[in-house]
Image (cartoon, rainbow, N blue to C red; front, side, top):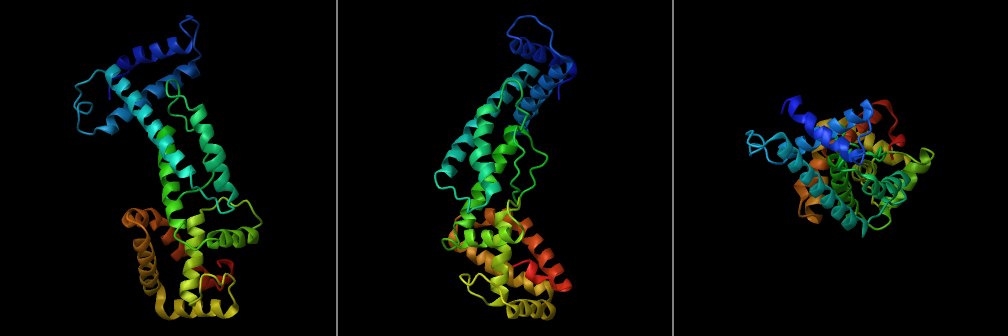
Length: 277
């Protein structure tokens, strides 16, 4: 990374553009923001071609920055194109937080995102939790990854019978008094696990006491290892039969699946399975 002396002129040029060349003073906080903007773009350039001319130090700081700005612009165009593609067949299944984040929030990001002066600003809180940790990302990086997550979730949820996902969410949401900020895929995976373990058809949404007892018995007799083996086989088969990129989707859902096993085990040990299904 270039030293501070190389960055100051770039920040100075940005400050002039920010004040429209009126030679007015720029608050210290704004200068810090502009410095972060420069660093963000330079990191984009470095990350876009590891081992290339940027990493080898063959470019000036200004050239690296300008390459980074172009990379940010490309990501914005790519993210917007992907968002528009998803929007054509997007389904929120009655999940208010998912709807608000994707349908209301993301367009606001593209309207307000400032590539020149504040590319590091994510703008949105992205209240809907996805199955991949993107907490360390900011700006268009975070938004792009979030949209990719939504794309994966939409493909997964579309594999289930029409109305099933909405019914599962409605049952879960009403139980916990609405407007839940929880991942929809994880809820559907949990419900599917319950149906498989209880030997219950998906269309029979409500669980009876004998269903809970059957799941409890399987857990006690087979143990976590065997349960995971059975369920992994079921989900792998489900995904492989429906999608070309089954490996990518399996990797995306892996953390959600692990959470399900933890919650299922805790519920079985504490006699609280009815709280899950």
